[in-house]
Length: 251
Image (cartoon, rainbow, N blue to C red; front, side, top):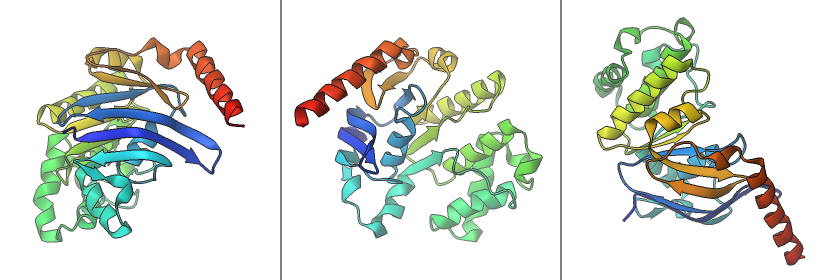
C-alpha cells in the first residue's frame, strides 16, 4: 500500500477560490517528490492538506492507510507527528535561541525537557549546526537559519518531510547544500516532498516531479527534470477554458 494517497482531491477556499481540482496521485514510502508550478497553483496547499493544517473540500487523503479527513480534532496532533514540516509561515521565533526553538517542537510532541537535549543536538548535528545551538536567529545567516528549520523538522524523527520552498531566498550554493541535505535524509528511508520554484535544482536532482497548472495535476514523471508545462501559458489557458466550459454546462 502507498504511504500517501490523494484520491480526487479538490480544495476551494471561501466557496469561490478553487486551489486544487480533482488531484490524484500516490507516494510510496521512501520516495523523493518535487511539486512544481507557478506561484498560486496549489503546491503549498497540497503540503498543508497532507498534514491537516487545512481540510479538503472533496475527495480523500490517506496517510499510512489513515483517512486524514476523518480524524477528530484531538487526533490531529498525533497524526501530525508523522511529518516534519518546513514552511515560510513557521519560521524561527526571534526571541528564542536555536536550541529553544527546537525544544518547543519537541515539547509540543510530548517529549520531556530531560530527554530533549540529546535529540536536539543530534538534529542540529545532522545539518551541521550543533555549534550554533545557543545563537539567536538574528545572529545566523539566511542559509544557517534554513538549516535550523530543517533540524526542527527532523528532531521528532518523522516518517515524512514536507518542505515548502526550502531554498527560497538562498543563493545558488546554499540552495544546493539544502537539496543535498534533503537527499541525504531521503536516502535514510524518509519520504521527502518538496515544493520548488527552481528549474535548475529540479533538473540536477532528477527525482519524481509532479507538475501543477491552475490547480490541476498535468504531469507526473519519475527521474525527471522541470516540466515545460509548469510555465506554459497555453496550458494555463487550456485548463481555464475547460473549467469555464464545465461551469457553463453545470448552469
